[in-house]
Image (cartoon, rainbow, N blue to C red; front, side, top):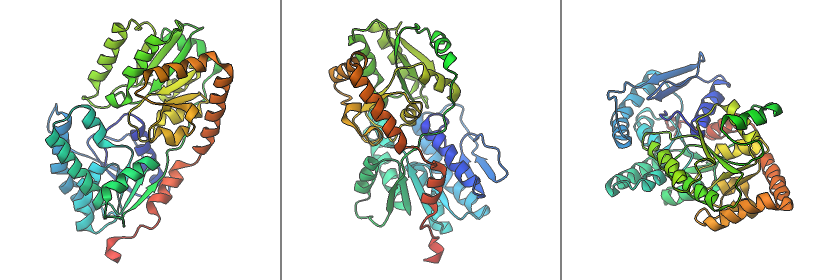
Length: 382
């Protein structure tokens, strides 16, 4: 069951489906929008959406009220053997089916779903409701798989006495990345108005307030390098995210760096690989992350990376030299300045990133299939 169609989480969702299909499993997927997979064993059950416009909470209430019965009917009709929930909300929704159909349920958690609501100053009553839904979703699960040690600790705290629920960690891997033509470097920069001799920072992913991009823009204005440009690749994944990009664009004008900050929006994987090849440093100043695919893709492209010293990013970068406090603008400014002014430091950063790349080079589809299916038995057998 899934709803969003942009970003690294969606990419992992598609990989999850492919992992089961490639091993001969029949997959029934409930979604609000069509999933672009064509396979004889894949059955996409798309919900009828009764409203032309709906905000995030209206959508959640619609899903919570309608999907449990729909999931139960679909599961019974198609004689399913296993329920996989891609998120805590979906675990809550499918808990009804789990108990009535007596089938095991595995929940995949990719990040803190409450963080975005807190960043948007959501009404306390709705935050409480979301917290209760999350708590029940966790308790309904037979097994939980997350992508970082930090998230596992947070989930274990929320489970409290429910220690019998197995919480496993499977990190994201570096996905297959197209290899760009070296001759594309100059044309790629030209497409985005970046001079041939410029130094280029890039950040990428779903644009929302948790990404803390405003801090990066403020840092750019403080760095005394007139030829330093910033590419902000990506966009919002929901309507609630879209005003954030407008805010960032306004900030570049206020700080008079609009000529050095570029917003390509969403780009295809081939174009993203060309952008990485045309950049000098990937940087992610997020306040909260699961395990960002954009950073893993940058590592896979042999692009040096810096990021916030927070769970998720810390699991990827590991070394203190590669991290910074996302609330300390001056520390970020100093780190970027050192990268471009100290050749020895730059080479050290590049060497550490190449080392970290090796830790995330593995077959994720095989691992996720094994992790989901190992030790799973139907409640009917109990």
